[in-house]
Length: 212
Image (cartoon, rainbow, N blue to C red; front, side, top):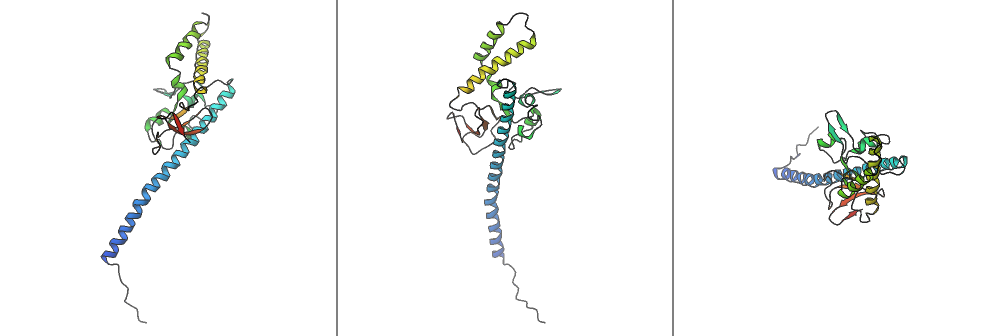
């Protein structure tokens, strides 16, 4: 049997052309893959925010409709994490639930505090006009009021006053819960939030509106 020896190897030019095509395809694919990953993380973040919102709703239903009131981020102490929304809602969603972390959050500080999100009512409670009304409410209490009752009055007063801000927020300026940092680039404001009506979306601070 005669074996043909007509097989021809790639020339240097042909090899360079193939390598160039592969490099071009990789250059096109890498940004596309990164964009798909970013969109997936963004979708996961929005889903997490809505899941946490449902836990907030469960808390309100079990507490006479009172808006949850706590620190805007958990406090890291030598004895562990104290306060914050994950701890307050632990009866409705586990403290270590993945929903407390944005899939695009790679900051170790978030891991230390136990959440990627800032609870806005916990921040707005410190507004001077709110604290002024809180002090008035506390001043009216009888001198015999014990500290636990005073704390309950404080929290309930803060909750009602902050809830009023959100209820009057027709422009969608204040999300209940939002990314603590910019993590979702590609939008006018690369942070997500969940609002009083339960909608989770990107926040656009400059225009005081939100993009669906």
